[in-house]
Length: 406
Ligand SMILES: Cc1ncc(COP(=O)(O)O)c(C=O)c1O
Image (cartoon, rainbow, N blue to C red):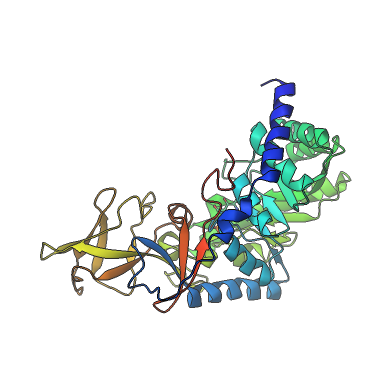
């Protein structure tokens, strides 16, 4: 795409973004829940146990306050403005987002301090982010490549919009970002040549550290990764940049990264829900189960076939339970039942020693293997106190066109 059509696209998508109703899908979530319980909502359904969920929100808030560190939780986990609002009310600076629709959905409910942690090099997406900022949205972007810087500078310049940015560092997971050290400083110099972009610091997500099994090993991997970010932040400061922010961290490393001097905020995500993958990483006290946060998210299912003595079938297959990681869904409070994939629509629940098979029509809840992609399969979350549905929350940023855009 030539520069002219690139800029035309950024401007047009910005206008579309500014005039469409990102809030609509959020407002639609304020539904009547009277009479709704876990016994009568349609399954498969995504359910949150409010007690566990609120305890998780509080625990992270308390930890960050005591550690004197900021946090900007990652909304990629939930894509849900109602949850983001609760995190901000508990003390978060704002939220991180992985996609443009997430940024739009969060801005639509008045959340400020939105950090887009993913790179964008697409004219439409860049235009939408610039339009969000032009429309008063408090957004910050992370840039990890000279081409990204070039495109963003052009779009922000054309729209006469000021944008704050972080230099995104690749501190070991080889996914996004520029290498730490001199390459990052060079990128910062390029960024600063645009009068529309202001460098605020660095971002250093270490995905390879977050799920390292065993606290000592996890600490080693994370400290090694984040040291590179601390050093680069120092280099930027010595080069004259006002690099205040170092944003990093995850649910697995929150109590490691918050002790590293120079880190200013955490981008923790999964802690609100937890999942089977995270339950396996082990906690600081040596416990094999990572129990710092409680599993609050489950998929509610119904037993729809019970023909055999050793297994039943539930109405949750690969369309309802994300099974792309190594772990399998775990039946909540039902030992001796083992889930196995059984197609798009169904799951097999096999009887193990010490278990008791549920009857046809009975409901079973499963803790999901990986919370983020599982939430992405649903439009709504049923927030429950015990069996009673207290609210229905919209997974408003689930689709690319969540805000009515293409
Ligand atoms: C860039 C980035 N930051 C933060 C997180 C949050 O990590 P977690 O959900 O492990 O807390 C993720 C998760 O994948 C991420 O991709």
